[in-house]
Length: 240
Image (cartoon, rainbow, N blue to C red):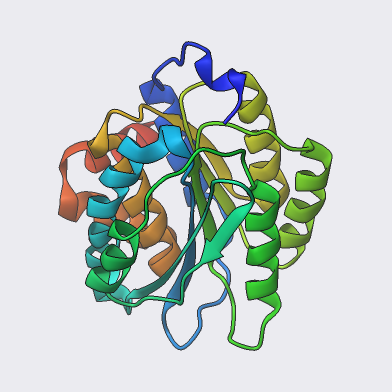
């Protein structure tokens, strides 16, 4: 948690969200394990993130619901907080299991540990348990050496593990680094308004659906859900 968090943060524009979804739709999809996509859900759990953490606890269930008809999804919660604390939970295939884990965690002041998150994703992708379909990260700040993060991102890119970074606000240092990580992994970076649970829900569900079913599934998801997702996809389709 650095002084950069004190900057006035600008809410993301509709164009940012549209651009993100376009990137998602053009991203190559890695192989599944046992018919299920495997998504690492990485979150910044430092002190300033508590309101967003609470929203994510409720939103995660919809990620499971959105992918149920596509064989489902396994989600692994990974987070950092406090003084050098980083933890990753076992893989969860049910929303209530993941929710219990998330509600038992309290945010604590500390600095970012994105490097440890990326290293963990690499270890998981290289393990005998199978592939990792994608890594999703939700945070607002970056307080580490960007070159070391870029090196790890490049390794994830070689393993075909895209990283999707949701940035709460518009911190310029974080934005530059997150964009680089997304580019190196063939993932995507999007700013969003942390006060909007609906916007975060739409973005998280969009990536979960894409990880589970690919491009067509994302378009079908928009038709089924309607609302914001359908409007976003319609705008993307109109741009060709």
